[in-house]
Image (cartoon, rainbow, N blue to C red; front, side, top):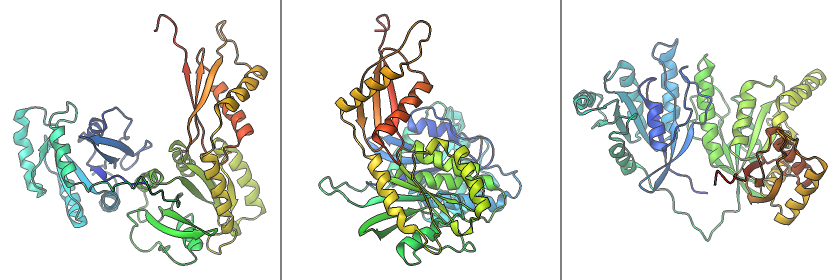
Length: 440
Protein backbone atom coordinates (compact mmCIF):
# COMPACT_ATOMS: atom_id res chain seq x y z
CA UNK A 1 0.00 0.00 0.00
CA UNK A 2 1.77 3.18 -1.16
CA UNK A 3 0.99 6.43 0.60
CA UNK A 4 0.10 9.44 -1.54
CA UNK A 5 1.67 12.87 -0.95
CA UNK A 6 -0.31 15.01 1.49
CA UNK A 7 -1.35 18.65 1.06
CA UNK A 8 -2.71 20.58 4.05
CA UNK A 9 -4.89 23.66 3.62
CA UNK A 10 -4.42 26.20 6.40
CA UNK A 11 -6.22 29.48 6.96
CA UNK A 12 -8.36 31.54 9.32
CA UNK A 13 -12.17 31.18 9.28
CA UNK A 14 -14.00 33.01 6.52
CA UNK A 15 -11.07 33.20 4.13
CA UNK A 16 -12.82 30.74 1.79
CA UNK A 17 -10.79 27.69 2.79
CA UNK A 18 -13.78 25.32 2.76
CA UNK A 19 -14.80 26.57 -0.67
CA UNK A 20 -11.27 25.98 -1.94
CA UNK A 21 -11.34 22.41 -0.58
CA UNK A 22 -14.54 21.73 -2.54
CA UNK A 23 -13.04 23.34 -5.64
CA UNK A 24 -9.95 21.14 -5.51
CA UNK A 25 -11.73 17.84 -4.86
CA UNK A 26 -14.36 18.69 -7.48
CA UNK A 27 -17.44 18.12 -5.35
CA UNK A 28 -19.38 19.72 -2.53
CA UNK A 29 -18.67 18.27 0.90
CA UNK A 30 -19.77 19.29 4.37
CA UNK A 31 -16.57 20.81 5.67
CA UNK A 32 -16.27 22.59 9.01
CA UNK A 33 -18.31 24.36 11.64
CA UNK A 34 -17.57 27.93 12.67
CA UNK A 35 -16.43 26.82 16.13
CA UNK A 36 -12.63 27.24 16.25
CA UNK A 37 -10.62 24.05 15.83
CA UNK A 38 -13.58 21.67 15.57
CA UNK A 39 -14.99 19.62 12.71
CA UNK A 40 -17.24 16.60 12.81
CA UNK A 41 -16.73 15.67 9.18
CA UNK A 42 -14.00 13.72 7.49
CA UNK A 43 -10.79 15.73 7.17
CA UNK A 44 -9.04 13.63 4.54
CA UNK A 45 -10.01 13.82 0.86
CA UNK A 46 -8.77 12.11 -2.29
CA UNK A 47 -7.75 14.68 -4.90
CA UNK A 48 -6.45 14.52 -8.46
CA UNK A 49 -4.98 17.19 -10.72
CA UNK A 50 -3.57 16.53 -14.19
CA UNK A 51 -3.33 12.81 -13.44
CA UNK A 52 -1.42 13.29 -10.17
CA UNK A 53 -3.18 11.92 -7.10
CA UNK A 54 -2.68 13.32 -3.61
CA UNK A 55 -4.42 13.47 -0.25
CA UNK A 56 -5.95 16.79 0.76
CA UNK A 57 -6.21 17.60 4.47
CA UNK A 58 -8.73 20.18 5.61
CA UNK A 59 -7.24 21.48 8.85
CA UNK A 60 -10.13 23.74 9.84
CA UNK A 61 -9.93 27.42 10.70
CA UNK A 62 -9.23 29.17 13.95
CA UNK A 63 -10.67 32.29 15.54
CA UNK A 64 -8.17 34.96 16.65
CA UNK A 65 -10.73 36.23 19.18
CA UNK A 66 -11.09 32.88 20.95
CA UNK A 67 -9.94 32.65 24.55
CA UNK A 68 -6.40 31.41 25.04
CA UNK A 69 -5.86 31.22 21.31
CA UNK A 70 -2.18 32.20 21.15
CA UNK A 71 -0.99 28.90 22.61
CA UNK A 72 -3.54 26.84 20.72
CA UNK A 73 -2.62 28.37 17.34
CA UNK A 74 0.97 27.22 17.70
CA UNK A 75 0.07 23.70 18.77
CA UNK A 76 -2.57 23.11 16.10
CA UNK A 77 -0.48 24.59 13.31
CA UNK A 78 2.55 22.46 14.25
CA UNK A 79 0.48 19.28 14.06
CA UNK A 80 -1.15 20.10 10.72
CA UNK A 81 2.12 21.25 9.18
CA UNK A 82 3.96 18.16 10.39
CA UNK A 83 1.54 15.79 8.67
CA UNK A 84 1.77 17.50 5.29
CA UNK A 85 4.28 17.24 2.45
CA UNK A 86 3.20 20.68 1.22
CA UNK A 87 1.01 23.47 2.53
CA UNK A 88 -1.52 25.77 0.87
CA UNK A 89 -1.78 28.85 3.07
CA UNK A 90 -5.06 30.67 2.32
CA UNK A 91 -5.35 34.40 2.96
CA UNK A 92 -8.30 36.69 2.19
CA UNK A 93 -6.85 39.09 -0.37
CA UNK A 94 -9.58 41.64 0.30
CA UNK A 95 -8.51 41.86 3.96
CA UNK A 96 -4.77 41.47 3.54
CA UNK A 97 -2.26 39.88 5.90
CA UNK A 98 -3.16 39.98 9.60
CA UNK A 99 -1.03 39.61 12.72
CA UNK A 100 -2.35 36.06 13.09
CA UNK A 101 -1.29 35.20 9.54
CA UNK A 102 2.23 36.45 10.26
CA UNK A 103 2.48 34.34 13.44
CA UNK A 104 1.51 31.19 11.59
CA UNK A 105 3.95 31.99 8.78
CA UNK A 106 6.78 31.92 11.33
CA UNK A 107 5.76 28.40 12.39
CA UNK A 108 5.49 27.19 8.81
CA UNK A 109 8.96 28.48 7.93
CA UNK A 110 10.49 26.46 10.77
CA UNK A 111 9.04 23.24 9.33
CA UNK A 112 10.98 23.55 6.10
CA UNK A 113 7.88 22.36 4.19
CA UNK A 114 7.10 24.00 0.83
CA UNK A 115 4.36 26.64 1.20
CA UNK A 116 2.09 27.89 -1.58
CA UNK A 117 0.35 31.18 -0.80
CA UNK A 118 -3.24 31.36 -2.07
CA UNK A 119 -4.68 34.88 -2.21
CA UNK A 120 -8.38 34.05 -2.21
CA UNK A 121 -11.46 36.11 -3.11
CA UNK A 122 -9.77 37.62 -6.16
CA UNK A 123 -12.90 37.59 -8.29
CA UNK A 124 -11.71 40.06 -10.95
CA UNK A 125 -8.57 41.68 -12.34
CA UNK A 126 -8.97 44.74 -10.10
CA UNK A 127 -8.64 42.59 -6.97
CA UNK A 128 -5.28 41.25 -8.17
CA UNK A 129 -3.70 44.50 -6.98
CA UNK A 130 -4.88 43.69 -3.46
CA UNK A 131 -3.32 40.22 -3.76
CA UNK A 132 0.05 41.76 -4.59
CA UNK A 133 0.24 43.23 -1.06
CA UNK A 134 0.63 39.66 0.31
CA UNK A 135 4.25 39.61 -0.89
CA UNK A 136 4.86 41.15 2.55
CA UNK A 137 4.37 37.72 4.18
CA UNK A 138 7.68 36.62 2.68
CA UNK A 139 6.28 33.40 1.17
CA UNK A 140 7.03 34.32 -2.41
CA UNK A 141 4.49 34.90 -5.15
CA UNK A 142 0.86 34.95 -3.98
CA UNK A 143 -1.39 33.00 -6.35
CA UNK A 144 -4.63 34.99 -6.91
CA UNK A 145 -7.63 32.66 -6.88
CA UNK A 146 -11.38 32.76 -6.57
CA UNK A 147 -12.32 29.53 -4.84
CA UNK A 148 -15.98 30.34 -5.42
CA UNK A 149 -15.70 30.77 -9.20
CA UNK A 150 -12.59 28.66 -9.87
CA UNK A 151 -10.55 31.58 -11.18
CA UNK A 152 -6.81 30.85 -10.92
CA UNK A 153 -7.24 27.48 -9.21
CA UNK A 154 -5.44 25.66 -12.03
CA UNK A 155 -2.30 27.80 -11.66
CA UNK A 156 -2.42 27.24 -7.89
CA UNK A 157 -2.59 23.46 -8.28
CA UNK A 158 0.19 23.46 -10.86
CA UNK A 159 2.37 25.19 -8.28
CA UNK A 160 1.40 22.63 -5.65
CA UNK A 161 2.27 19.68 -7.89
CA UNK A 162 5.64 21.24 -8.67
CA UNK A 163 6.70 20.99 -5.00
CA UNK A 164 5.05 17.67 -4.11
CA UNK A 165 7.22 14.55 -3.80
CA UNK A 166 6.45 11.79 -6.26
CA UNK A 167 4.22 9.02 -4.96
CA UNK A 168 6.34 5.90 -4.39
CA UNK A 169 6.13 3.49 -7.28
CA UNK A 170 4.26 0.30 -6.51
CA UNK A 171 5.98 -3.00 -7.12
CA UNK A 172 3.14 -4.97 -8.65
CA UNK A 173 5.02 -8.26 -8.36
CA UNK A 174 5.83 -7.92 -4.67
CA UNK A 175 3.00 -8.06 -2.15
CA UNK A 176 3.94 -7.08 1.39
CA UNK A 177 2.57 -9.85 3.64
CA UNK A 178 2.72 -7.64 6.72
CA UNK A 179 -0.62 -6.34 7.95
CA UNK A 180 -0.93 -2.65 8.78
CA UNK A 181 -2.59 -2.01 12.14
CA UNK A 182 -3.63 1.48 13.27
CA UNK A 183 -3.70 1.95 17.04
CA UNK A 184 -6.40 4.58 17.60
CA UNK A 185 -8.23 6.12 20.52
CA UNK A 186 -8.40 9.20 22.70
CA UNK A 187 -5.23 10.64 24.24
CA UNK A 188 -3.98 9.04 27.46
CA UNK A 189 -5.83 5.73 27.08
CA UNK A 190 -2.58 3.74 26.71
CA UNK A 191 -1.97 3.54 22.95
CA UNK A 192 1.78 4.10 23.22
CA UNK A 193 1.98 1.76 26.21
CA UNK A 194 0.29 -0.94 24.14
CA UNK A 195 2.78 -0.51 21.29
CA UNK A 196 5.72 -0.66 23.71
CA UNK A 197 4.27 -3.76 25.36
CA UNK A 198 3.82 -5.53 22.01
CA UNK A 199 7.33 -4.54 20.92
CA UNK A 200 8.74 -5.60 24.32
CA UNK A 201 10.76 -2.37 24.42
CA UNK A 202 10.16 1.39 24.64
CA UNK A 203 9.68 2.29 21.00
CA UNK A 204 7.62 5.46 21.58
CA UNK A 205 7.54 8.09 24.30
CA UNK A 206 4.74 7.74 26.84
CA UNK A 207 5.57 10.74 29.05
CA UNK A 208 3.02 13.55 28.63
CA UNK A 209 5.44 16.28 29.63
CA UNK A 210 7.25 16.73 26.33
CA UNK A 211 5.93 18.27 23.12
CA UNK A 212 3.66 16.76 20.52
CA UNK A 213 4.03 13.74 18.27
CA UNK A 214 3.39 15.16 14.83
CA UNK A 215 3.41 12.18 12.48
CA UNK A 216 1.82 8.78 13.06
CA UNK A 217 4.69 6.44 13.99
CA UNK A 218 5.21 3.20 12.03
CA UNK A 219 6.79 0.32 13.95
CA UNK A 220 7.53 -3.20 12.69
CA UNK A 221 6.68 -5.63 15.49
CA UNK A 222 6.79 -9.44 15.57
CA UNK A 223 3.61 -10.96 16.97
CA UNK A 224 2.69 -14.63 16.87
CA UNK A 225 5.75 -15.44 14.76
CA UNK A 226 4.82 -12.88 12.06
CA UNK A 227 5.73 -9.26 11.39
CA UNK A 228 3.06 -6.56 11.66
CA UNK A 229 3.30 -2.84 10.92
CA UNK A 230 1.78 -0.90 13.81
CA UNK A 231 0.79 2.72 13.17
CA UNK A 232 0.75 4.55 16.50
CA UNK A 233 -1.29 7.78 16.60
CA UNK A 234 -0.52 8.52 20.25
CA UNK A 235 1.28 11.56 21.56
CA UNK A 236 -1.08 14.51 21.15
CA UNK A 237 -0.50 16.21 24.50
CA UNK A 238 -3.08 17.94 26.66
CA UNK A 239 -1.26 21.25 26.90
CA UNK A 240 -4.41 23.26 26.29
CA UNK A 241 -7.50 23.29 28.44
CA UNK A 242 -9.98 23.74 25.61
CA UNK A 243 -10.75 20.32 24.19
CA UNK A 244 -12.21 21.29 20.80
CA UNK A 245 -8.97 21.90 18.89
CA UNK A 246 -7.36 18.93 20.61
CA UNK A 247 -10.15 16.57 19.56
CA UNK A 248 -10.13 17.96 16.04
CA UNK A 249 -6.47 17.24 15.39
CA UNK A 250 -6.69 13.88 17.15
CA UNK A 251 -9.40 12.91 14.65
CA UNK A 252 -7.29 14.33 11.81
CA UNK A 253 -4.34 12.08 12.63
CA UNK A 254 -6.72 9.17 13.22
CA UNK A 255 -8.11 9.63 9.69
CA UNK A 256 -4.62 9.65 8.19
CA UNK A 257 -3.66 6.50 10.10
CA UNK A 258 -6.87 4.70 9.07
CA UNK A 259 -6.28 5.55 5.41
CA UNK A 260 -2.97 3.68 5.60
CA UNK A 261 -4.17 0.70 7.66
CA UNK A 262 -6.11 -2.50 7.06
CA UNK A 263 -7.27 -3.11 10.61
CA UNK A 264 -7.68 -0.74 13.57
CA UNK A 265 -7.26 -1.42 17.28
CA UNK A 266 -9.48 0.98 19.21
CA UNK A 267 -7.99 1.44 22.69
CA UNK A 268 -10.46 2.47 25.42
CA UNK A 269 -9.70 3.27 29.05
CA UNK A 270 -11.92 0.71 30.77
CA UNK A 271 -11.56 2.43 34.14
CA UNK A 272 -13.38 5.55 32.86
CA UNK A 273 -16.89 5.97 31.43
CA UNK A 274 -17.21 5.78 27.66
CA UNK A 275 -17.36 9.22 26.05
CA UNK A 276 -18.73 10.74 22.89
CA UNK A 277 -15.17 11.01 21.58
CA UNK A 278 -14.72 7.23 21.99
CA UNK A 279 -17.84 6.50 19.94
CA UNK A 280 -16.91 9.11 17.35
CA UNK A 281 -13.49 7.53 16.73
CA UNK A 282 -15.09 4.06 16.49
CA UNK A 283 -17.58 5.41 13.95
CA UNK A 284 -14.67 6.93 12.00
CA UNK A 285 -12.99 3.51 11.75
CA UNK A 286 -16.21 1.76 10.70
CA UNK A 287 -17.01 4.39 8.06
CA UNK A 288 -13.46 4.10 6.73
CA UNK A 289 -14.25 0.45 6.02
CA UNK A 290 -11.45 -0.95 8.19
CA UNK A 291 -11.50 -4.15 10.20
CA UNK A 292 -11.85 -3.32 13.90
CA UNK A 293 -10.78 -4.73 17.28
CA UNK A 294 -11.74 -2.99 20.53
CA UNK A 295 -9.20 -3.24 23.36
CA UNK A 296 -10.37 -2.25 26.84
CA UNK A 297 -7.15 -1.14 28.50
CA UNK A 298 -6.23 -0.54 32.17
CA UNK A 299 -8.29 -3.59 33.15
CA UNK A 300 -6.20 -3.88 36.31
CA UNK A 301 -7.99 -0.73 37.54
CA UNK A 302 -11.49 -2.12 36.92
CA UNK A 303 -13.38 -3.32 40.02
CA UNK A 304 -16.69 -5.20 40.13
CA UNK A 305 -18.78 -2.03 40.26
CA UNK A 306 -17.01 -0.49 37.26
CA UNK A 307 -17.34 -3.77 35.37
CA UNK A 308 -21.12 -3.71 35.90
CA UNK A 309 -21.47 -0.16 34.57
CA UNK A 310 -19.08 -0.85 31.69
CA UNK A 311 -21.27 -3.70 30.45
CA UNK A 312 -24.27 -1.35 30.45
CA UNK A 313 -22.26 1.30 28.55
CA UNK A 314 -21.15 -1.25 25.95
CA UNK A 315 -24.75 -2.35 25.37
CA UNK A 316 -25.88 1.26 25.01
CA UNK A 317 -23.00 3.03 23.26
CA UNK A 318 -21.36 0.33 21.10
CA UNK A 319 -24.45 -1.28 19.64
CA UNK A 320 -23.39 -0.23 16.12
CA UNK A 321 -20.16 -2.27 16.34
CA UNK A 322 -21.33 -5.42 18.10
CA UNK A 323 -19.45 -7.32 15.39
CA UNK A 324 -16.03 -6.09 16.59
CA UNK A 325 -13.99 -8.51 18.77
CA UNK A 326 -13.40 -7.17 22.29
CA UNK A 327 -10.43 -7.97 24.51
CA UNK A 328 -9.49 -6.82 28.02
CA UNK A 329 -5.84 -5.89 28.55
CA UNK A 330 -3.42 -4.02 30.81
CA UNK A 331 -0.85 -2.54 28.42
CA UNK A 332 1.63 -1.34 31.07
CA UNK A 333 2.01 -4.82 32.58
CA UNK A 334 1.45 -6.76 29.33
CA UNK A 335 -1.51 -8.67 30.83
CA UNK A 336 -3.47 -10.45 28.07
CA UNK A 337 -1.86 -8.42 25.26
CA UNK A 338 -0.97 -11.76 23.67
CA UNK A 339 -4.68 -12.20 22.92
CA UNK A 340 -4.54 -9.32 20.47
CA UNK A 341 -3.07 -11.45 17.66
CA UNK A 342 -6.00 -13.87 17.71
CA UNK A 343 -8.47 -10.96 17.63
CA UNK A 344 -6.59 -9.30 14.75
CA UNK A 345 -6.53 -12.51 12.73
CA UNK A 346 -10.30 -12.97 13.23
CA UNK A 347 -11.00 -9.37 12.19
CA UNK A 348 -8.84 -9.56 9.05
CA UNK A 349 -10.40 -12.91 8.10
CA UNK A 350 -13.89 -11.41 8.40
CA UNK A 351 -12.76 -8.35 6.45
CA UNK A 352 -11.58 -10.49 3.53
CA UNK A 353 -14.45 -13.04 3.57
CA UNK A 354 -16.02 -13.70 0.17
CA UNK A 355 -19.36 -15.43 -0.34
CA UNK A 356 -20.05 -17.22 -3.61
CA UNK A 357 -22.87 -15.80 -5.74
CA UNK A 358 -24.81 -19.08 -5.67
CA UNK A 359 -24.58 -19.47 -1.90
CA UNK A 360 -25.48 -15.81 -1.37
CA UNK A 361 -28.60 -15.91 -3.54
CA UNK A 362 -29.70 -19.23 -2.07
CA UNK A 363 -29.36 -17.86 1.46
CA UNK A 364 -31.13 -14.57 0.73
CA UNK A 365 -33.89 -16.48 -1.04
CA UNK A 366 -34.57 -18.46 2.14
CA UNK A 367 -34.43 -15.35 4.32
CA UNK A 368 -36.85 -13.39 2.13
CA UNK A 369 -39.24 -16.35 1.96
CA UNK A 370 -39.31 -16.57 5.75
CA UNK A 371 -39.39 -12.81 6.36
CA UNK A 372 -40.63 -10.95 3.26
CA UNK A 373 -40.38 -7.19 2.98
CA UNK A 374 -43.48 -5.36 4.34
CA UNK A 375 -46.06 -4.27 1.81
CA UNK A 376 -46.08 -0.50 1.36
CA UNK A 377 -48.60 1.30 -0.85
CA UNK A 378 -49.84 -2.00 -2.19
CA UNK A 379 -46.39 -2.99 -3.41
CA UNK A 380 -43.80 -5.37 -2.01
CA UNK A 381 -40.22 -4.93 -3.24
CA UNK A 382 -38.30 -8.14 -3.88
CA UNK A 383 -34.61 -9.05 -4.17
CA UNK A 384 -34.12 -10.20 -7.77
CA UNK A 385 -30.41 -10.97 -7.64
CA UNK A 386 -27.45 -10.29 -5.38
CA UNK A 387 -23.68 -10.47 -5.64
CA UNK A 388 -20.64 -9.62 -3.56
CA UNK A 389 -18.87 -6.85 -5.42
CA UNK A 390 -15.71 -6.78 -3.30
CA UNK A 391 -14.00 -7.67 -0.05
CA UNK A 392 -12.03 -5.55 2.42
CA UNK A 393 -14.67 -4.63 3.51
CA UNK A 394 -17.33 -7.06 2.21
CA UNK A 395 -19.59 -5.09 -0.14
CA UNK A 396 -22.83 -6.53 -1.53
CA UNK A 397 -25.07 -5.25 -4.30
CA UNK A 398 -28.78 -6.15 -4.18
CA UNK A 399 -30.75 -5.78 -7.41
CA UNK A 400 -34.36 -5.25 -6.35
CA UNK A 401 -37.79 -4.65 -7.85
CA UNK A 402 -38.20 -1.58 -5.62
CA UNK A 403 -36.46 0.34 -2.85
CA UNK A 404 -35.94 -1.66 0.36
CA UNK A 405 -36.54 0.15 3.65
CA UNK A 406 -33.59 0.97 5.91
CA UNK A 407 -34.93 -1.29 8.66
CA UNK A 408 -35.11 -4.25 6.28
CA UNK A 409 -31.55 -3.57 5.09
CA UNK A 410 -30.37 -3.71 8.72
CA UNK A 411 -32.27 -6.98 9.13
CA UNK A 412 -30.50 -8.44 6.07
CA UNK A 413 -27.10 -7.34 7.40
CA UNK A 414 -27.80 -9.02 10.73
CA UNK A 415 -28.80 -12.28 9.02
CA UNK A 416 -25.72 -12.19 6.76
CA UNK A 417 -23.52 -11.92 9.85
CA UNK A 418 -25.34 -14.80 11.54
CA UNK A 419 -24.80 -17.00 8.49
CA UNK A 420 -21.33 -16.05 7.22
CA UNK A 421 -19.61 -14.40 10.20
CA UNK A 422 -17.79 -11.27 9.03
CA UNK A 423 -16.33 -10.96 12.53
CA UNK A 424 -14.52 -7.68 13.05
CA UNK A 425 -15.58 -6.16 9.73
CA UNK A 426 -18.16 -3.62 8.64
CA UNK A 427 -20.52 -4.73 5.86
CA UNK A 428 -21.63 -2.44 3.05
CA UNK A 429 -25.02 -3.23 1.50
CA UNK A 430 -25.97 -1.35 -1.67
CA UNK A 431 -29.30 -1.69 -3.43
CA UNK A 432 -30.11 -0.99 -7.04
CA UNK A 433 -33.89 -0.83 -7.58
CA UNK A 434 -35.10 -1.70 -11.05
CA UNK A 435 -36.05 1.37 -13.02
CA UNK A 436 -39.61 1.79 -14.18
CA UNK A 437 -40.26 1.84 -17.90
CA UNK A 438 -40.95 5.56 -18.04
CA UNK A 439 -37.63 6.21 -16.21
CA UNK A 440 -35.73 4.22 -18.79
